[in-house]
Image (cartoon, rainbow, N blue to C red; front, side, top):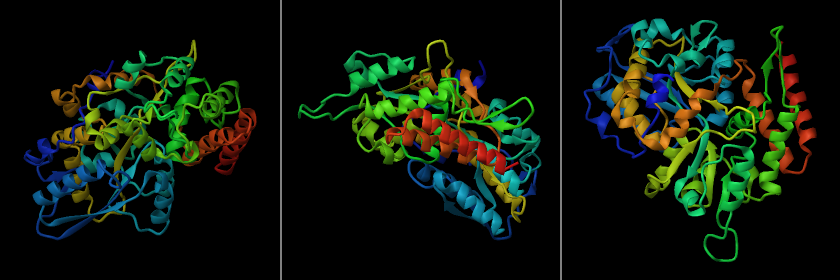
Length: 441
C-alpha cells in the first residue's frame, strides 16, 4: 500500500489559518525551472479554473491567490471560473481563438483533448525535476501524455460511497459491499422521517443529470459490473463495451433505484451534484456516490454533520471487484504564456505543504504532495473508505473525445429512468461511442 493510502484522510473544518500563518509556502525561493520571476515589472497572470466557481473551493483558492500576490506585489491574478461540466467547451473556444490563459485546469478526461490543441507546455522543465519528485508518483501517472508531463495535479478525489453514519446507525445498518446490499440499505433508509405520513428521507442522492458529473459517477459503477465504457483492443483500436450483460445490468440498476425501489428523491433527472449535496446535508438522503470533495461540500452546508459522515468502497457484484476512479484536476501552464516563470511560481506556491493542507481541510479534496500527505493534520478516520478504494484505482482512457463517452453513458441511464429498456439504451450508447471512435480515427 503506498504512502497516499496510509495517509489518505482529511479533516473538513473550514480552517484556513494554517496556511495564512505560514511564511508563504513557495519552495522555489523566487525562481523556478522557468527561470527567475521578475520583481520590477507588473505581471498579470490569467488563471482559468474549474474549482474557483463555488464554495468551499472558491474561498480557499482566492485566499491562496491573495497570499501569493501579497508575497509578489508586482503580480496580479485574474481568474476565469468555468464550471467543470462546461469546461471542455470553454477550453475549445479559448484554444481555437488563440486566447489561452497563463495557467489553466487540466485533468485525465481533458489531457488528450488539450494535447490535440497543442496548448500545454511540458511542465517538468518549467517546474523543475526536483519539484516533480515531491509528488506522490502514483498521482502523476495520468498526468503524462506520450511521456510529456501535461499537467501537475493539485488534488485527488477517489470515487467512493459517502454515507451518513447517524442515519445508518439509527437504521442498524453497515455500509453495503454489494449492489444487492446497497438496494436493501437504500430501501430501509427511505422512510417518513418527519412523521407526516409522507416519505421525507430517501436512501440515495443520485446525480442524475446527463453531463460530466452524472457520467463520471456512473462509469465506475458500470465498471464494477465488468463493463467498460471504452476499451482498447489488442490491435490498438478502441470500442465501447456498454452493450454487454454488465453494462445492461448497471443501467437497469440505475433505472430501478428510481422507478422500482423508489429510493431516490423526486427529480433525479435534473439533480445536479450541488443538489445531491444539499440532499445529503439536509437529511433528505443517506448515501451518495462522489469523490471526497463531496464531504467538504456537505460540511460546508451543514457543519453540525462533522463526525457523522464516512466513506466506503463502492459496492460491487458478487465475485466482482470494487472500482474507483482516482479523480483529479491539475494545473497546466500554457506553452504560449509570456509569464511562464511567474506562472510556475504560482503553481508551486499553490502546492506548498501549508496550502495543500489548508485546501484539503476546506474542501475535502486530498493532497498530492508527499510532505502534505504525511502531515498529522490529515489523519481523520472518516476517510478510511476512500483510502481503501485506492487499491482498486482504474485509469480512464486517454482519448480526446472521452468527455463525449461519459456523456453517452449518462444519457443512457437517463433513458432507462425515462422508460427505455436497458438493452436498447445500452445499444444506443454503444453506437454513439463507437461513432465517436470512428470519427476520431
